[in-house]
Picture (cartoon, rainbow, N blue to C red):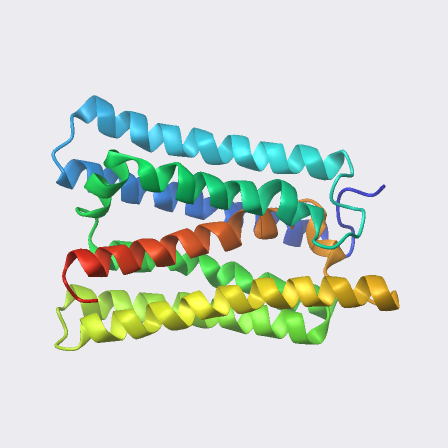
Length: 243
């Protein structure tokens, strides 16, 4: 089975791989900043910084291996890329990371604007629209997912500036933005599941091309990580007695 996509030019695939790798370093840098603000030992901060990079690198390698083994290419409901990558990553976030003391220590010290800026990686949503232009994704899914992610990324930059400037209403705006962003990613996941079910029943175009390398890294990494970041922002706001 074909594990890599040949729908789009190679340079687009290469550009995507670079873009989807950027949030790994953004998250690591945010962890480092939070650790330093929490006055953790330099060695501990360094371990957390490089440990997070190694973890996500191994996760990317695991996802890539499954793609090349053809695990994702069988069109099933729910999609195997969700069962073997996204769900395990969600479990790791919520049943391991959220249970650690170090997470809460660092979260309390990460600037709110830094957490919001992490969502700028959602600019990778442009690739949904690029894929659609090559007839590789259904119109509704491509534009719903693509525009939603682009909107979240652009507004994250604007919101982060408001937070840094301590705008009078930045707390309420952050809460509203976070709710909208959370709803958007849940909607995208639901749409992907529905379209997959329909494509199996009607033998029409679905989201199967997103299970091929390197684009399989989107469903594997992005939804779970975006949900984790949104929940972290809710938690950070609660720490400030905002919600």
